[in-house]
Length: 336
Image (tube, rainbow, N blue to C red):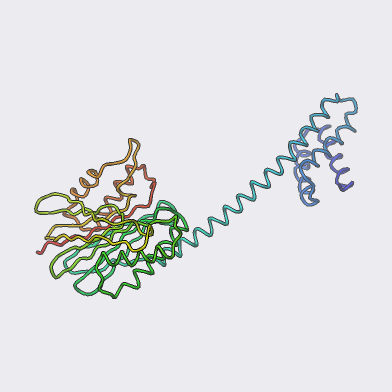
């Protein structure tokens, strides 16, 4: 320990104890930089302070000096804990930066464009609960008479979920220009997921294709939330469900395929469980709440409908999403 620094500290302390004025206190505060520059630890500073007082107050009770020994031990362990804490903070900051970069890459990689399709109004909202999303939407215009949409949800969050979505997008890109029915699409994607993704990761997916030729919406599901079909004529909702295991559970799975005819004013609603399992103070909302919201806006555009559903459900959750939120609406337009 530098002898000069110790002597300087003794002198500053002595002056302050004699005067106890603000100026001498300020000198002591500035001198603390000397300890930092000389890399003198907090416990060593306490040792210097103790030695200085022992010279100035030789008749002080021994209990006072023992208290300084106790303080030195406390500061040693405090310093170790502080270093560990600061190290964790730095690691967390580095992780946050990496997550932000990963989220930006994900947004760029998985960005989808809503297709403009004569006679069909399309709207969607997809908002992650955290930086990385485990939900995914994929739109395809196979030709001028067909439009397809896939909605997927990874059972898991963060970077692993984002990597899973990359596999889904890769598979969908390969199928973009092929005329494959929904059940076969899920078979292909399931094979890719099963072969390339860890066994602990599973994905639910709903895939549907609308044909303008006969107004038929054909769909298949891989363990996903049932879609809703609103029948304008009957003023009633029907669930669109089909048998099929989650993607990645096993290879060689066959996916059931079903279809429904859309008439003017009808619409299809596809959602992830972040919508259907909206949690409020009193518990999870029922599907009837979502249906009532949709009925209120059934005459609005598809995008207005999904925007309002998101805003209302977010408000019910006190503006905090507990899960990724994704909803898509395909609405058969009414001819003028």
